[in-house]
Image (cartoon, rainbow, N blue to C red):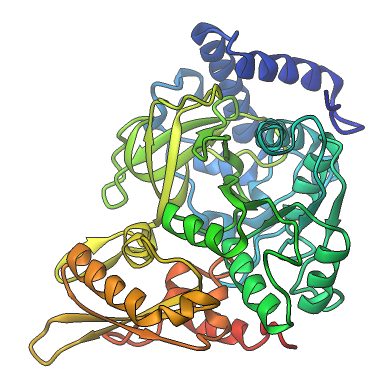
Length: 473
């Protein structure tokens, strides 16, 4: 049994962990969960409206005493633009009460402060610990595995969060960030081999680039490494991409959690490779991305969350910008929480042949059945007659490269059938570093070259970032 972080408010830690344990033991009744959610919603609304300069103004027209989990539509949305403009005015507790200070990466807009206090750390990490514990038990039994952590930046929560979770489970962990100027890809690969790391925690893009780098530096992915589990996060990972990663590494791939710097951990993976919402920490709404109309807690649309932990920076009706599909759980894994599937950002939807497709639908069309790929990119052109046409660029390694023409023909046929536009596939020896920038910028900027329009600001950011992200320097 793991212990909350030292210095955590003892009353909150005791109350929350008792609730958390009952939630995962399935002994928490629906009435008890509803009582917790009503009480915490009231606490968050009272705290934010009284102590956050932003929310004092933002919620001024609302009678917060009348708001319940069933009447969230009476509250205004909080957007990413609000967070960029208001910065520290969003906080509803003093900054000095924080345990950690983080920021968003700031690659596509102003970096926003994301401090966390002990309450937020306890509540968020508890769900990740539960998830990892069950996945580790599935693969390693009673023993703790050796874990390699590959995070993005020093002021990102990744390293602290997953490091604490590994410690909670008694797992040795090494922070070997391959893009760090101190580590780099050669050192990361050497440590993976020398430490016989069994679990890698990284983004899907890093996992792909790491595989490519391993081949470049003369390693055999199966013979030289003992990786059995890949826990990926930080960007979209469709089942098709996960299957491709499994074909490269010979390891089981889990889309380990869904969350953000601003909103913490919203959902975690189960041993059955589905994602369950952390429903003790959030009120969930699925909204229409255009009209803002709420469909309630289930359905397809843009995910909006109201945080239930009254920490330093709780957010009220926060529009995540992510397209999701949520349904009541029918998973046999035993974990509680509704099931969520992430299908990409709302901004990453693309019109092809007069139809609008999510990022997830496009990636699934490209990668379904593809193995041995360390990257893909899609070029969109428009003919003189006004028809959209696609060129898919695939980079393959190993014996899959030998079967390239066969894989390319299958991919072209599938993409054309699913997306309804003409498609061709080119085999590439090197797509460049831009395809690995998805977690820092966006899937669209990393994967799409849309020649129907001028490059947008995100694409330009991704191009500049790629100049500094090669695995050979």
